[in-house]
Length: 295
Image 1 (tube, rainbow, N blue to C red):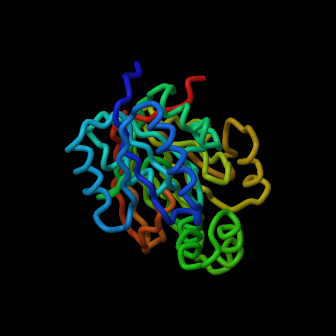
Image 2: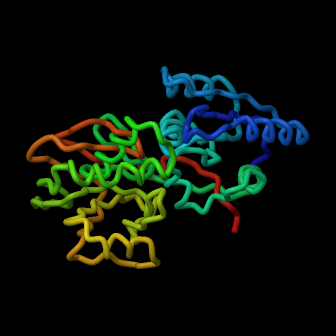
Image 3: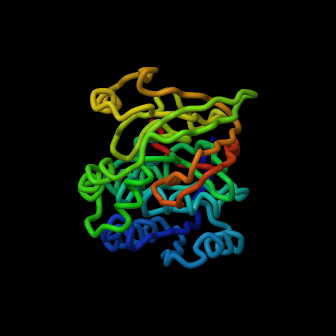
């Protein structure tokens, strides 16, 4: 998509995501945009009406870009605010897990990230609707959602915090779970430790759980991990192009219903939602504009 001249930017910053200090990044962006005569407005999230606040700000001004500094949850929140606006979103990954950004090879240093923001390409990506929620990245039932819940209640942040919660979560979780899935005109029952609704390929850890997934093809994948086989889990960190059917099954679709035999922990884009029994899932094709590296 053709770039247009950038005159005004909104910078949405989550001050507490990932226990990462954003002040250096803020100062850098302010100085660089000032030198290029680009107007900048900053919004810091506080957990209260952020989506409606951002939406109102965007509707009242002519922004050419919305920069986002935060993790997957912050990025998802901003994407909801940008629905139907045609304002491109730019990622400055700064969360406990940055899985969505990982799928687009966003650079790790702020100078290269700003180059993407100002000179990169604009693509359109899909957004998944799950009941009244939205997902850009990955949602799932089961052990991973349980892990996120336990992580949220712990004090240690970052990947080390996730790792620390892994063993106690596996020991206490009631997996596998039973799911009834209706999709593509079929209904089937699946027993799985994790049932993922995937718009992208990779988790923030780098594990590729949806090797055939594309974020702009108008479809999402339902992936059932039948067990937590350590060897197969390790393989997700390699360049495998398919999943072992003894380990996981995958269905590509545009809509689905999932019914659980009993309430199961559920998360969306790294945020724990609660224990759910039923979800309805649909796709919003190419709903969000995103800046990525031109190469």
